Length: 140
Length: 334
Image 1 (spheres, rainbow over the protein chains, first blue to last red):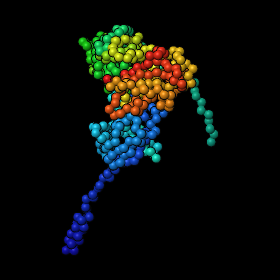
Image 2: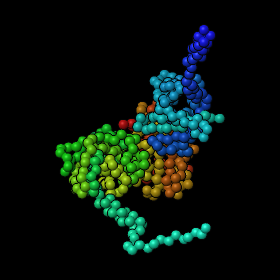
Image 3: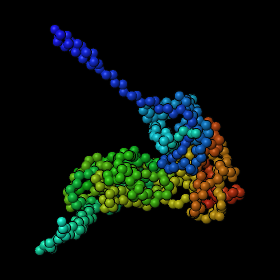
Image 4: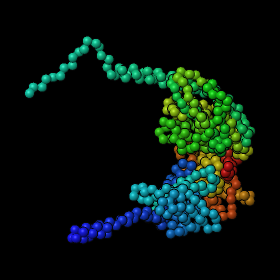
Protein backbone atom coordinates (compact mmCIF):
# COMPACT_ATOMS: atom_id res chain seq x y z
CA UNK A 1 0.00 0.00 0.00
CA UNK A 2 2.81 2.33 0.94
CA UNK A 3 4.35 1.68 -2.46
CA UNK A 4 1.10 2.48 -4.25
CA UNK A 5 0.72 5.75 -2.36
CA UNK A 6 4.34 6.62 -3.07
CA UNK A 7 3.85 5.83 -6.74
CA UNK A 8 0.68 7.97 -6.97
CA UNK A 9 2.43 10.86 -5.19
CA UNK A 10 5.34 10.59 -7.60
CA UNK A 11 3.01 10.58 -10.61
CA UNK A 12 1.00 13.57 -9.41
CA UNK A 13 4.23 15.50 -8.66
CA UNK A 14 5.50 14.68 -12.12
CA UNK A 15 2.19 15.64 -13.68
CA UNK A 16 2.20 19.08 -12.07
CA UNK A 17 5.91 19.55 -12.69
CA UNK A 18 5.55 19.11 -16.46
CA UNK A 19 3.91 22.39 -17.39
CA UNK A 20 4.47 23.65 -20.91
CA UNK A 21 6.87 26.55 -20.93
CA UNK A 22 5.44 29.73 -22.40
CA UNK A 23 8.01 31.13 -24.81
CA UNK A 24 7.47 34.73 -25.82
CA UNK A 25 9.46 35.81 -28.84
CA UNK A 26 11.15 39.18 -28.34
CA UNK A 27 9.35 41.79 -30.40
CA UNK A 28 11.21 44.12 -32.77
CA UNK A 29 10.83 47.68 -31.48
CA UNK A 30 9.15 50.34 -33.61
CA UNK A 31 11.71 52.43 -35.46
CA UNK A 32 11.88 55.88 -33.95
CA UNK A 33 12.76 58.77 -36.27
CA UNK A 34 11.40 61.60 -34.19
CA UNK A 35 13.62 64.66 -34.11
CA UNK A 36 15.41 66.99 -36.52
CA UNK A 37 17.21 65.51 -39.53
CA UNK A 38 19.67 67.11 -41.96
CA UNK A 39 21.02 66.06 -45.34
CA UNK A 40 24.59 64.73 -45.16
CA UNK A 41 24.77 63.33 -48.70
CA UNK A 42 22.82 63.98 -51.89
CA UNK A 43 23.09 62.50 -55.36
CA UNK A 44 21.24 63.23 -58.61
CA UNK A 45 21.24 60.38 -61.12
CA UNK A 46 24.26 59.02 -59.25
CA UNK A 47 26.25 62.27 -59.35
CA UNK A 48 27.28 63.52 -55.92
CA UNK A 49 25.90 67.02 -55.34
CA UNK A 50 26.67 67.23 -51.61
CA UNK A 51 29.42 69.81 -51.86
CA UNK A 52 28.06 71.53 -54.97
CA UNK A 53 24.65 72.60 -53.72
CA UNK A 54 23.94 74.08 -50.31
CA UNK A 55 21.85 71.50 -48.49
CA UNK A 56 23.09 72.57 -45.03
CA UNK A 57 20.15 74.79 -43.95
CA UNK A 58 17.58 72.09 -44.73
CA UNK A 59 15.90 70.46 -41.76
CA UNK A 60 13.01 68.04 -41.51
CA UNK A 61 11.45 67.45 -38.11
CA UNK A 62 9.57 64.23 -37.54
CA UNK A 63 7.13 63.80 -34.66
CA UNK A 64 5.01 60.68 -34.04
CA UNK A 65 3.00 61.18 -37.21
CA UNK A 66 3.79 64.59 -38.69
CA UNK A 67 6.77 66.28 -40.31
CA UNK A 68 7.74 69.90 -40.85
CA UNK A 69 10.32 71.19 -43.31
CA UNK A 70 12.54 74.24 -42.75
CA UNK A 71 14.67 75.89 -45.44
CA UNK A 72 13.44 73.61 -48.23
CA UNK A 73 15.52 72.14 -51.05
CA UNK A 74 14.22 69.91 -53.85
CA UNK A 75 12.58 67.10 -51.86
CA UNK A 76 9.97 64.40 -52.22
CA UNK A 77 7.39 66.87 -50.85
CA UNK A 78 7.49 70.62 -50.52
CA UNK A 79 4.85 71.12 -47.84
CA UNK A 80 4.44 69.95 -44.27
CA UNK A 81 2.20 66.99 -43.56
CA UNK A 82 2.04 63.48 -42.16
CA UNK A 83 4.43 60.57 -42.54
CA UNK A 84 4.18 56.81 -42.11
CA UNK A 85 6.27 53.68 -42.42
CA UNK A 86 4.88 50.71 -44.34
CA UNK A 87 5.83 48.61 -41.28
CA UNK A 88 6.82 50.38 -38.04
CA UNK A 89 9.10 47.51 -36.98
CA UNK A 90 10.62 46.62 -40.34
CA UNK A 91 10.19 49.70 -42.53
CA UNK A 92 11.03 49.46 -46.22
CA UNK A 93 9.19 52.56 -47.40
CA UNK A 94 8.53 55.99 -45.96
CA UNK A 95 5.39 57.83 -47.07
CA UNK A 96 4.85 61.56 -46.96
CA UNK A 97 1.35 62.94 -47.10
CA UNK A 98 1.68 66.66 -47.65
CA UNK A 99 -1.29 68.87 -46.93
CA UNK A 100 -3.64 69.20 -49.92
CA UNK A 101 -1.83 66.60 -52.05
CA UNK A 102 -1.50 62.84 -52.51
CA UNK A 103 0.90 60.61 -50.64
CA UNK A 104 4.40 60.17 -52.00
CA UNK A 105 6.38 57.11 -51.07
CA UNK A 106 10.13 56.57 -51.04
CA UNK A 107 12.10 53.35 -50.71
CA UNK A 108 13.85 53.49 -47.36
CA UNK A 109 17.20 52.30 -46.11
CA UNK A 110 17.83 52.65 -42.40
CA UNK A 111 21.50 51.78 -41.81
CA UNK A 112 23.68 52.65 -38.85
CA UNK A 113 26.93 54.23 -39.97
CA UNK A 114 29.61 55.32 -37.54
CA UNK A 115 27.22 54.77 -34.67
CA UNK A 116 24.67 57.12 -36.23
CA UNK A 117 21.32 56.06 -37.64
CA UNK A 118 20.86 57.20 -41.27
CA UNK A 119 17.70 57.57 -43.32
CA UNK A 120 18.32 57.06 -47.03
CA UNK A 121 15.43 58.01 -49.27
CA UNK A 122 15.13 57.95 -53.07
CA UNK A 123 12.70 60.08 -55.03
CA UNK A 124 12.10 62.42 -57.98
CA UNK A 125 11.35 66.01 -57.14
CA UNK A 126 10.84 67.33 -60.65
CA UNK A 127 11.10 65.22 -63.78
CA UNK A 128 10.48 61.54 -63.05
CA UNK A 129 13.53 60.66 -65.18
CA UNK A 130 15.78 62.23 -62.54
CA UNK A 131 16.41 60.32 -59.34
CA UNK A 132 17.68 61.92 -56.14
CA UNK A 133 19.02 60.00 -53.19
CA UNK A 134 19.39 61.85 -49.90
CA UNK A 135 21.11 60.49 -46.80
CA UNK A 136 19.72 62.13 -43.68
CA UNK A 137 21.19 62.08 -40.22
CA UNK A 138 19.95 63.43 -36.90
CA UNK A 139 20.95 67.09 -36.50
CA UNK A 140 22.51 68.17 -33.23
CA UNK B 1 73.03 11.69 -32.80
CA UNK B 2 74.61 12.95 -35.95
CA UNK B 3 72.57 14.61 -38.64
CA UNK B 4 73.31 13.37 -42.10
CA UNK B 5 72.92 15.84 -44.99
CA UNK B 6 70.17 14.78 -47.35
CA UNK B 7 71.44 14.08 -50.79
CA UNK B 8 69.44 14.18 -54.02
CA UNK B 9 70.52 11.44 -56.28
CA UNK B 10 70.88 12.52 -59.83
CA UNK B 11 68.67 10.38 -61.99
CA UNK B 12 69.74 8.97 -65.25
CA UNK B 13 67.05 10.90 -67.22
CA UNK B 14 66.99 14.70 -67.37
CA UNK B 15 64.00 15.99 -65.33
CA UNK B 16 61.76 18.75 -66.67
CA UNK B 17 61.17 21.30 -63.94
CA UNK B 18 57.63 22.19 -62.80
CA UNK B 19 58.20 25.77 -63.92
CA UNK B 20 58.79 24.70 -67.50
CA UNK B 21 55.65 22.52 -67.43
CA UNK B 22 53.53 25.43 -66.21
CA UNK B 23 54.99 27.71 -68.88
CA UNK B 24 54.08 25.18 -71.57
CA UNK B 25 50.56 24.79 -70.16
CA UNK B 26 50.23 28.57 -69.97
CA UNK B 27 51.34 28.97 -73.56
CA UNK B 28 48.86 26.31 -74.70
CA UNK B 29 46.06 27.98 -72.75
CA UNK B 30 46.99 31.33 -74.26
CA UNK B 31 46.94 29.76 -77.69
CA UNK B 32 43.52 28.27 -77.03
CA UNK B 33 42.11 31.50 -75.58
CA UNK B 34 43.65 33.61 -78.32
CA UNK B 35 42.06 31.43 -80.95
CA UNK B 36 38.54 32.24 -79.69
CA UNK B 37 37.20 35.51 -80.98
CA UNK B 38 34.13 37.55 -81.78
CA UNK B 39 34.20 40.49 -84.15
CA UNK B 40 31.80 43.06 -85.54
CA UNK B 41 32.73 43.01 -89.21
CA UNK B 42 30.52 45.92 -90.20
CA UNK B 43 27.80 48.24 -88.92
CA UNK B 44 25.13 49.37 -91.36
CA UNK B 45 23.51 52.50 -90.00
CA UNK B 46 21.99 55.53 -91.76
CA UNK B 47 23.75 58.86 -91.27
CA UNK B 48 20.50 60.47 -90.21
CA UNK B 49 16.92 59.75 -89.26
CA UNK B 50 13.84 61.87 -88.69
CA UNK B 51 12.91 62.31 -85.04
CA UNK B 52 10.20 59.84 -84.06
CA UNK B 53 11.12 57.37 -86.81
CA UNK B 54 12.69 53.97 -86.28
CA UNK B 55 16.48 53.81 -86.53
CA UNK B 56 17.39 50.57 -88.36
CA UNK B 57 20.87 49.17 -87.73
CA UNK B 58 22.48 45.94 -88.91
CA UNK B 59 25.57 44.36 -87.34
CA UNK B 60 27.48 41.68 -89.20
CA UNK B 61 29.22 39.51 -86.63
CA UNK B 62 31.68 36.62 -86.85
CA UNK B 63 32.27 34.23 -83.95
CA UNK B 64 35.14 31.74 -83.94
CA UNK B 65 34.96 29.08 -81.26
CA UNK B 66 37.65 26.99 -79.64
CA UNK B 67 35.55 24.86 -77.35
CA UNK B 68 32.06 23.49 -76.85
CA UNK B 69 29.93 26.03 -75.08
CA UNK B 70 26.26 26.76 -74.41
CA UNK B 71 25.47 30.43 -73.96
CA UNK B 72 23.02 33.19 -74.67
CA UNK B 73 24.05 35.77 -77.24
CA UNK B 74 24.35 39.32 -75.90
CA UNK B 75 23.89 42.54 -77.88
CA UNK B 76 24.11 45.99 -76.28
CA UNK B 77 23.46 49.44 -77.69
CA UNK B 78 24.71 52.83 -76.49
CA UNK B 79 21.91 55.34 -77.01
CA UNK B 80 20.58 58.63 -75.62
CA UNK B 81 18.66 57.99 -72.40
CA UNK B 82 15.73 59.95 -73.73
CA UNK B 83 15.06 57.21 -76.30
CA UNK B 84 14.28 54.73 -73.48
CA UNK B 85 15.68 51.93 -75.61
CA UNK B 86 14.80 49.30 -72.99
CA UNK B 87 11.17 49.84 -73.92
CA UNK B 88 11.54 51.12 -77.50
CA UNK B 89 14.14 48.87 -79.13
CA UNK B 90 13.78 45.41 -80.63
CA UNK B 91 16.73 43.22 -81.52
CA UNK B 92 16.69 39.98 -83.50
CA UNK B 93 19.38 38.01 -85.32
CA UNK B 94 19.91 35.26 -87.81
CA UNK B 95 22.93 32.99 -87.96
CA UNK B 96 24.51 29.94 -89.58
CA UNK B 97 23.48 27.72 -86.67
CA UNK B 98 19.88 28.88 -86.25
CA UNK B 99 16.78 28.91 -88.37
CA UNK B 100 14.74 32.08 -88.77
CA UNK B 101 14.79 35.27 -86.70
CA UNK B 102 15.98 34.75 -83.14
CA UNK B 103 14.42 37.14 -80.62
CA UNK B 104 16.19 38.94 -77.80
CA UNK B 105 14.99 40.58 -74.58
CA UNK B 106 16.27 43.38 -72.38
CA UNK B 107 18.47 42.27 -69.49
CA UNK B 108 16.96 44.01 -66.46
CA UNK B 109 19.26 46.62 -64.91
CA UNK B 110 20.85 45.20 -61.78
CA UNK B 111 21.33 41.72 -63.25
CA UNK B 112 25.02 40.89 -62.64
CA UNK B 113 27.04 40.40 -65.81
CA UNK B 114 29.05 37.15 -66.02
CA UNK B 115 32.60 37.58 -64.72
CA UNK B 116 31.76 41.23 -64.15
CA UNK B 117 32.80 41.51 -60.51
CA UNK B 118 29.19 42.02 -59.45
CA UNK B 119 28.55 44.88 -61.89
CA UNK B 120 25.43 44.75 -63.99
CA UNK B 121 25.65 44.89 -67.77
CA UNK B 122 25.05 48.66 -68.24
CA UNK B 123 27.64 49.54 -65.60
CA UNK B 124 30.18 47.03 -66.89
CA UNK B 125 29.74 48.23 -70.48
CA UNK B 126 30.15 51.87 -69.44
CA UNK B 127 33.24 50.98 -67.41
CA UNK B 128 34.98 48.74 -69.95
CA UNK B 129 33.84 50.08 -73.27
CA UNK B 130 33.08 53.69 -72.43
CA UNK B 131 30.89 56.28 -74.07
CA UNK B 132 32.25 56.37 -77.61
CA UNK B 133 33.19 60.03 -77.35
CA UNK B 134 29.72 61.31 -76.51
CA UNK B 135 30.26 64.52 -74.58
CA UNK B 136 26.97 64.83 -72.70
CA UNK B 137 26.31 62.37 -69.86
CA UNK B 138 22.71 61.57 -70.85
CA UNK B 139 23.50 58.28 -72.58
CA UNK B 140 23.04 54.68 -71.48
CA UNK B 141 24.03 51.18 -72.44
CA UNK B 142 21.06 48.85 -72.82
CA UNK B 143 21.88 45.13 -73.04
CA UNK B 144 19.82 42.31 -74.53
CA UNK B 145 20.14 38.52 -74.23
CA UNK B 146 18.88 36.06 -76.80
CA UNK B 147 15.74 34.39 -75.49
CA UNK B 148 17.29 31.00 -76.25
CA UNK B 149 20.74 29.65 -75.44
CA UNK B 150 22.82 28.03 -78.16
CA UNK B 151 25.33 25.21 -78.14
CA UNK B 152 28.39 25.69 -80.27
CA UNK B 153 31.09 23.16 -81.07
CA UNK B 154 34.82 23.75 -80.98
CA UNK B 155 36.68 25.24 -83.92
CA UNK B 156 33.60 26.54 -85.69
CA UNK B 157 33.14 29.83 -87.51
CA UNK B 158 29.67 31.29 -87.15
CA UNK B 159 28.29 34.32 -88.94
CA UNK B 160 25.42 36.25 -87.40
CA UNK B 161 23.43 39.19 -88.70
CA UNK B 162 21.94 41.32 -85.96
CA UNK B 163 18.96 43.55 -86.72
CA UNK B 164 18.41 46.46 -84.32
CA UNK B 165 15.37 48.72 -84.54
CA UNK B 166 15.19 51.65 -82.14
CA UNK B 167 12.23 54.02 -82.00
CA UNK B 168 13.69 57.50 -81.70
CA UNK B 169 11.98 60.45 -80.07
CA UNK B 170 11.21 63.79 -81.65
CA UNK B 171 14.26 65.33 -79.95
CA UNK B 172 16.65 67.17 -82.20
CA UNK B 173 20.05 65.62 -81.52
CA UNK B 174 23.46 64.50 -82.67
CA UNK B 175 24.73 61.26 -81.11
CA UNK B 176 27.41 58.62 -81.64
CA UNK B 177 25.69 55.25 -81.19
CA UNK B 178 27.71 52.30 -79.93
CA UNK B 179 27.26 48.53 -80.23
CA UNK B 180 28.68 45.57 -78.34
CA UNK B 181 28.32 41.80 -78.79
CA UNK B 182 29.33 39.08 -76.31
CA UNK B 183 27.90 35.98 -74.67
CA UNK B 184 26.40 35.06 -71.32
CA UNK B 185 29.32 32.86 -70.24
CA UNK B 186 32.40 34.97 -70.92
CA UNK B 187 30.87 38.44 -70.57
CA UNK B 188 33.53 41.09 -71.07
CA UNK B 189 36.19 39.01 -69.31
CA UNK B 190 38.84 39.59 -71.96
CA UNK B 191 39.06 41.70 -75.07
CA UNK B 192 38.72 38.76 -77.47
CA UNK B 193 35.49 37.59 -75.84
CA UNK B 194 33.51 40.64 -76.94
CA UNK B 195 33.50 43.18 -79.74
CA UNK B 196 32.44 46.81 -79.70
CA UNK B 197 31.97 49.38 -82.41
CA UNK B 198 31.11 53.07 -82.43
CA UNK B 199 29.79 54.83 -85.45
CA UNK B 200 30.12 58.44 -86.55
CA UNK B 201 27.74 61.12 -85.48
CA UNK B 202 24.10 60.24 -86.16
CA UNK B 203 21.82 63.19 -86.89
CA UNK B 204 18.26 62.98 -85.63
CA UNK B 205 16.22 65.70 -87.28
CA UNK B 206 13.75 66.53 -84.55
CA UNK B 207 12.24 69.51 -82.84
CA UNK B 208 13.44 71.90 -80.16
CA UNK B 209 16.93 72.80 -78.95
CA UNK B 210 19.73 70.76 -80.54
CA UNK B 211 21.16 68.25 -78.09
CA UNK B 212 24.69 67.82 -79.42
CA UNK B 213 26.56 64.86 -77.93
CA UNK B 214 29.22 65.00 -80.67
CA UNK B 215 30.75 68.47 -80.60
CA UNK B 216 32.23 70.34 -77.65
CA UNK B 217 29.72 72.89 -76.37
CA UNK B 218 30.53 76.21 -74.79
CA UNK B 219 27.58 75.62 -72.44
CA UNK B 220 25.89 72.41 -71.37
CA UNK B 221 22.95 71.67 -69.10
CA UNK B 222 22.65 68.57 -66.95
CA UNK B 223 20.28 66.78 -66.79
CA UNK B 224 18.96 67.27 -70.31
CA UNK B 225 15.45 66.52 -69.19
CA UNK B 226 14.29 68.34 -66.11
CA UNK B 227 11.56 70.50 -64.61
CA UNK B 228 11.84 73.64 -62.50
CA UNK B 229 11.81 71.64 -59.24
CA UNK B 230 15.00 69.78 -60.23
CA UNK B 231 18.57 70.81 -59.45
CA UNK B 232 19.92 71.94 -62.82
CA UNK B 233 23.65 72.21 -63.55
CA UNK B 234 24.79 74.87 -66.03
CA UNK B 235 28.35 74.61 -67.30
CA UNK B 236 30.43 77.15 -69.19
CA UNK B 237 33.50 75.80 -70.98
CA UNK B 238 35.68 78.72 -72.04
CA UNK B 239 38.23 76.28 -73.43
CA UNK B 240 36.04 75.42 -76.42
CA UNK B 241 36.53 78.81 -78.06
CA UNK B 242 37.89 82.24 -77.26
CA UNK B 243 35.32 84.55 -75.64
CA UNK B 244 35.19 87.82 -73.74
CA UNK B 245 35.59 85.83 -70.53
CA UNK B 246 38.98 84.32 -71.45
CA UNK B 247 40.75 86.23 -68.68
CA UNK B 248 37.88 86.48 -66.21
CA UNK B 249 38.75 85.56 -62.65
CA UNK B 250 35.07 85.25 -61.77
CA UNK B 251 32.12 84.23 -63.94
CA UNK B 252 28.46 84.85 -63.15
CA UNK B 253 25.16 83.70 -64.52
CA UNK B 254 22.70 86.18 -65.98
CA UNK B 255 19.51 84.20 -66.35
CA UNK B 256 15.84 84.60 -67.14
CA UNK B 257 13.10 82.07 -66.47
CA UNK B 258 10.12 82.12 -68.84
CA UNK B 259 6.89 81.07 -67.15
CA UNK B 260 3.98 79.15 -68.66
CA UNK B 261 2.12 82.47 -68.85
CA UNK B 262 4.96 84.03 -70.83
CA UNK B 263 6.34 86.20 -68.01
CA UNK B 264 10.11 86.65 -67.93
CA UNK B 265 11.71 86.57 -64.48
CA UNK B 266 15.30 87.79 -64.55
CA UNK B 267 18.16 87.22 -62.11
CA UNK B 268 21.15 89.13 -63.43
CA UNK B 269 23.04 90.58 -60.49
CA UNK B 270 26.53 89.42 -59.62
CA UNK B 271 25.93 87.77 -56.23
CA UNK B 272 26.68 84.43 -54.58
CA UNK B 273 23.41 83.15 -56.00
CA UNK B 274 24.70 83.60 -59.56
CA UNK B 275 28.44 83.11 -59.00
CA UNK B 276 29.85 80.10 -60.83
CA UNK B 277 32.39 77.67 -59.40
CA UNK B 278 35.68 77.33 -61.26
CA UNK B 279 36.55 73.79 -62.31
CA UNK B 280 39.89 74.89 -63.77
CA UNK B 281 40.96 75.07 -67.41
CA UNK B 282 38.45 77.88 -68.08
CA UNK B 283 35.56 75.66 -67.07
CA UNK B 284 32.83 76.95 -64.74
CA UNK B 285 29.77 75.37 -63.19
CA UNK B 286 26.64 76.39 -61.31
CA UNK B 287 23.92 74.23 -59.77
CA UNK B 288 20.61 76.03 -59.52
CA UNK B 289 17.20 75.17 -58.15
CA UNK B 290 15.02 77.26 -60.47
CA UNK B 291 12.03 77.41 -58.13
CA UNK B 292 14.16 79.05 -55.45
CA UNK B 293 16.36 81.14 -57.75
CA UNK B 294 13.31 82.78 -59.33
CA UNK B 295 11.29 82.72 -56.10
CA UNK B 296 8.37 81.07 -57.86
CA UNK B 297 4.90 81.04 -56.32
CA UNK B 298 3.16 77.67 -56.02
CA UNK B 299 1.12 78.33 -59.15
CA UNK B 300 4.08 79.50 -61.25
CA UNK B 301 6.00 77.10 -63.48
CA UNK B 302 8.83 77.64 -65.92
CA UNK B 303 8.93 76.47 -69.51
CA UNK B 304 12.38 77.74 -70.51
CA UNK B 305 15.61 79.32 -69.34
CA UNK B 306 17.43 82.02 -71.28
CA UNK B 307 20.92 82.79 -70.04
CA UNK B 308 24.32 84.45 -70.54
CA UNK B 309 27.61 84.21 -68.70
CA UNK B 310 29.12 87.49 -67.46
CA UNK B 311 32.21 88.80 -65.72
CA UNK B 312 32.16 90.29 -62.23
CA UNK B 313 30.98 93.67 -63.52
CA UNK B 314 28.21 92.25 -65.65
CA UNK B 315 29.58 94.33 -68.53
CA UNK B 316 30.91 91.42 -70.57
CA UNK B 317 28.27 88.92 -71.64
CA UNK B 318 28.84 85.68 -73.51
CA UNK B 319 25.94 83.92 -75.20
CA UNK B 320 25.36 81.11 -77.67
CA UNK B 321 28.49 80.25 -79.71
CA UNK B 322 30.27 83.06 -77.87
CA UNK B 323 27.93 85.71 -79.32
CA UNK B 324 25.21 87.96 -78.00
CA UNK B 325 22.27 85.57 -78.43
CA UNK B 326 21.33 83.94 -75.13
CA UNK B 327 21.64 80.21 -74.52
CA UNK B 328 18.26 78.49 -74.35
CA UNK B 329 17.12 75.55 -72.28
CA UNK B 330 13.62 74.07 -72.47
CA UNK B 331 12.17 72.25 -69.47
CA UNK B 332 10.67 68.92 -70.44
CA UNK B 333 10.23 65.46 -69.02
CA UNK B 334 9.77 62.68 -71.55
